[in-house]
Amino acid sequence: MKERSRQKQATRAPSEGDHGCMTATHLGTGSDDPQVAEALAAEYETLSPECRADPDRLNWFLAPDFHKFGASGGEIEYQGTAQCVAAYMDPAGEPIKAERVRGLRLADGLVMVKYSANINGKWSNRTSL
Picture 1 (cartoon, rainbow, N blue to C red):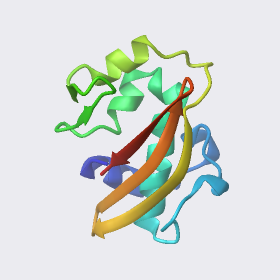
Picture 2 (cartoon, rainbow, N blue to C red):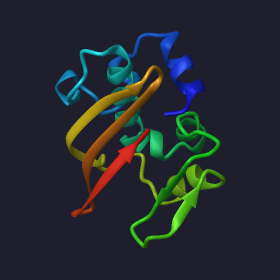
Picture 3 (cartoon, rainbow, N blue to C red):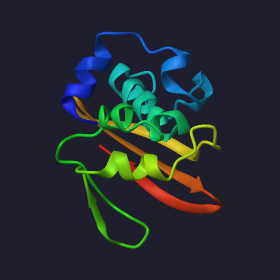
């Protein structure tokens, strides 16, 4: 999670409405650490159909140096990612199913979130910093 997102989130308490499908039972390992709990809440938000369908909302969570490896093995960078995700997302659709969600604080302000995601019946392992 980018530093400015962490700073923005730290200024307000998360609520159920802020995190789409997030509930207390979704918090994984390390949720007693406020930084880890905040990172987990942000990750759940990015998995919600409402967030994924809104490019501005999703961009708020992405760092300018964001990149990921897609299912095809290609690397996807920040520019245009949120718009591309929104183009294929139904805001009333089913949220991504996440299992074995856990977070680990690596340093002050740096949390690693790991989980398995099921999108349309296909499983993938994911990691976010």
